Image 1 (cartoon, one colour):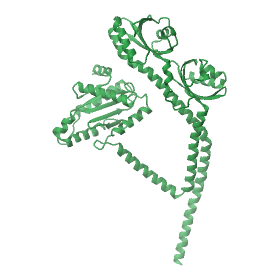
Image 2 (cartoon, one colour; image 1 turned 135 degrees about the vertical axis):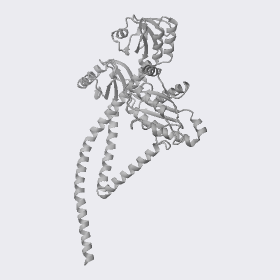
Image 3 (tube, rainbow, N blue to C red; image 1 turned 60 degrees about the vertical axis):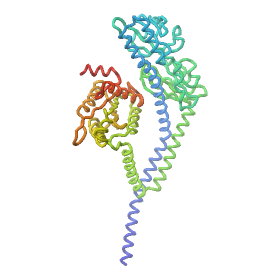
Length: 506
């Protein structure tokens, strides 16, 4: 009887537990199904928005690549500009020599220097006169102009973007003019992942087409993109014009004849230029369907999971997943860590810096390359164990003077890299450089035998001195080379201008 009663009690308890699970599970099931239904109805629109956003971002990347090409001309011209400002333009042969060097080391197909009257020389030593050109008048009318599009053929022989550098000498003012061929714009889509009907076009504020890359399309034959759109898509053209005036990016679906397109457009940030990318609607539809297929697959999986693992299994699965994620993170952290110093290892340091650069391409930052001086001598005279202690102490101490968000790593036997994010201005650049320099003035390692280790430090500023990891690394490494050449135990900037500002400040 007692056993039978106990069994009945346990049976009732099991029924009660089962009942307690059924009601919440049923409610959860209904809620989840409603949520999944609502989610599925929105997924198609979300997929279209995702594709549109991706196309806009791709257009921005192409626009930035074009501007980077123009900006590279200005960077290459800086040494020539400084020499002209220092030496003047009185020596005709010297001016031609400098212009020839600039032409041969840049993507400009013509380079010239002229005075405020528009008279001057080109890299071939020929006299030029650009006084009556529209682009020279634009230069005279605006002290801040950097890029000017022109189609004037009397001197250029082809469409060009004139890149302007103002040269201020002791007694006069001149202009360094570099002519970038617009034909090079056509190479932007040479390695595109889009279909062959995709095109890029650069237009001015009125919609006049300046350059085209990719497929030849009927939209581009009239010479004015906005007018071509407006002929059969008045509402979309009005929307595009309004967004262009407001400096906003966007996308619009248009139809011309029997062809349909998705047009994405972004402001270039200079001269009210706008970059348009045209992608066939069939390509867009394929991408949307791909997004939607993935969503449907995910929804099906979710429904299966809800039915199969709605009870205890789901709870166990969540707990297991949490533990698995924690273990995975521990393993990832361990894989990223240099065992001797506790800092990031070389691979982790490079990866994290590249990820930050990709997310923040315009955020000024600093890269320090630190090379411990005479480290082989430390190992040879005091032993490898003490050498390891020097590196360990350096890693522990230097990690404590920067923000947790900054990236510090050991990238070689006695080499360290420090990447400081979000440095707002020139004063902050110099302040952080002094901080690192002062650190090594007081750095000591060793528990019983104190050893004052020194370092040669190179500094480069992102993105001005390198807009990707490799170029910035080379610039910082060049700073290390300068520091070593000057006698070690010091910090050197990649750019001599920083060095001069640093000396004047001290």
